Length: 199
Image (cartoon, rainbow, N blue to C red; front, side, top):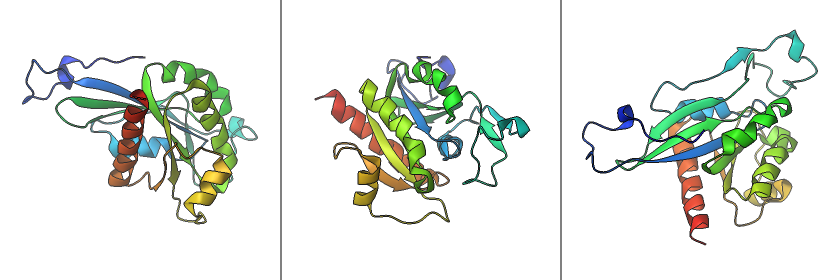
């Protein structure tokens, strides 16, 4: 799933001699943590989603207790695109959060420059699988605390300790519904990934 910019990805005012640099970013985290919302808040194109209605078959498999209003779930991936400038374009891939879909992560992670791990502080345990996955593979990642309205507020140091992430890993607090907040999170990741690539 490595993507090169197609002809329609080129802006009309762009010098045809200057090729866009496409970068792939993975958005991961537990079930119902806001991955689809994050991709949708940033994408300059209508995001491709694979949301399906949750049925009685998911009872006992998908724990929706912390997100009682959730009626759909991602069954493959979310996809969006954002053009940063006349040379840089980011492709966003939202990975499904349920463990029965983890077999897809290896394919989605191929060619990615980094990942954003979204965390709901009401369900911190749900984020460990994603954090472990990227640590094991040496893929740069940023941890983003998605602020839900009814979630408790914790100091950053306490969150870092609870998530057992090293000081070198960026940790930000953000709101996936807010495009500016999501963009700042994305910029944090790209800067971190670039810094890691020159070490």
